[in-house]
Amino acid sequence: DAGVTQSPTHLIKTRGQQVTLRCSPKSGHDTVSWYQQALGQGPQFIFQYYEEEERQRGNFPDRFSGHQFPNYSSELNVNALLLGDSALYLCASSLGSGTDTQYFGPGTRLTVL
Amino acid sequence: AQSVTQLDSQVPVFEEAPVELRCNYSSSVSVYLFWYVQYPNQGLQLLLKYLSGSTLVESINGFEAEFNKSQTSFHLRKPSVHISDTAEYFCAVSVPQGGSEKLVFGKGTKLTVNP
Image 1 (cartoon, rainbow over the protein chains, first blue to last red):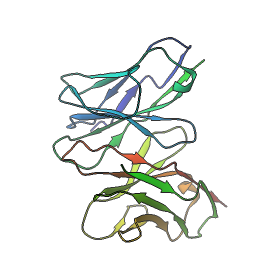
Image 2: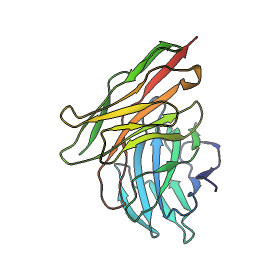
Image 3: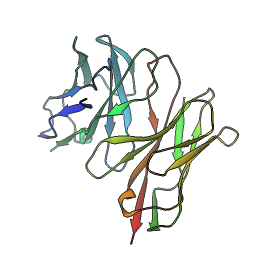
């Protein structure tokens, strides 16, 4: 039973560029949430996708957008990258029909130069 | 809105000593409570959770946490730590919403177990 997987593992971009991060949820899960973890901080909620729609959103600008595909996998897109976007981006999956626990992937380390 | 305060950013202890990592939360409604552990350069792993029922919850590797509603706390304890417990520990809360819960995390406590 595969857990949550994310790609790529590491990514280096320059300011102003755009980036796409990918996540495959744990088998049987239909909900994907994205979190940003800056160095030395706890993860911050970006948004959550369920049934291919954004269900909840945290306090992040519109430069952060996402998508969920029919197979429940998800993408996180960030446009016009800033130095402050450098962080570990974590994907978590859960079962959207009332479960309680989110399972996290290993994360994508994004460095913006 | 919910918030989580982890009172200690770093906790150094010696191997086989007991440890307590403190967590307090703020919420006007009932919450679920979680502890996650993060090893260097890895994602988060669920350690234990409180949803309802018994206020004392345990993990398979010897950690336990007790939900105290009056003190709005969910402290994590282990009676005897190992070198392998060295990691960062995050306390988190979510509000039950029928499946659309988001997690609100504390800033983390870095536990270092020394020989």
